[in-house]
Length: 465
Image (cartoon, rainbow, N blue to C red; front, side, top):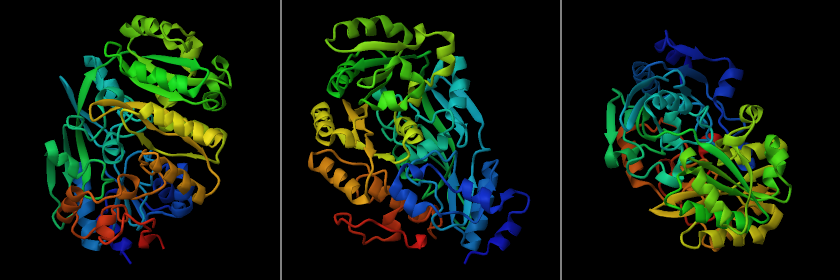
């Protein structure tokens, strides 16, 4: 057992929370999107929460926890969906929310503390006509450090690809968990040591990200009589090199009508909808492009909306990516979702084929992105959940159709991704976290090097017992 009392004595002067109810609340992320993770992780909680306000605080916490063999799980805003921030071994939740300063805005880049909210960063950078290249649908609440440590892409990925693509992170400042913690600045290929590693091999304290030109993006909804028409339109639009968009998401009926409650007056229950963000200067070109399509009805554009609608309606980013699922869960808490890659060049064909195959059980939701330089789409389909066995069968059918699943019903790095060890991240963990105290249970290669990824077995972290 960890000596939490001794640890608290060593950390005297820092803001420590040990009220069990508050600790439990701060020990949770959005894992409950998954009924599987909800069953596995619902009772998980830390022993205490420590609030860091500076990098010096982080170093002090890691040094003390190392000395007392206390696990540390980092937390930003807790908006992740896969249990990334859940402290499976208890110990300390290290809250970085108060490390939230935007430190520098330059031409083409911004430097911020890990706890800075992404919308706050954009507010600061827009003064110079710039904005972040991409962000999750939780833009108004998510931290930049949490996005780098747990995210993979989002709004903006139609232009810039994935978060781990070279150039989408410029540098990271990282603290190791050793007897004498080191502060490292990583850039270039070294970024892959800690990006999307869930804080298992270093604590990110500072992030430098690239910027692009900012616009007052126009939210557009286009209605279609079929999901196939919506997906075909989205693919054609994504390949229009001269029309600048930031988000293109076709969503199958009846999801928009049933779940986008404040937009309901614009929609019909039978309509599939393509949710789009278009640069203002490109709206005439977009309208001309839409007019040439045989299908597609413009049902909403924010630049021509009433003042009351503009103020009351959620923007397109909060209708897309994981916000689509979130809005669905508010209406029907029994649903869940999957994350699918539909490989180029048959991405639209495969997406429509699978939507037709499952019908009302798995409702199509695509997010168009650039992947390895090609326009393709990820899927976040809505699943009407019945049993864990049926969910596994749905996953198997997708993979048999050549569509890999990034499984949002697993809390480990490997099972949620490509079911293989990331040798770079494992090697860095051996250097940066020799006792294995950072976010235990999330990296299978550390916990169980002999785990067979080719089997149908799910990894279960012993600490959960």
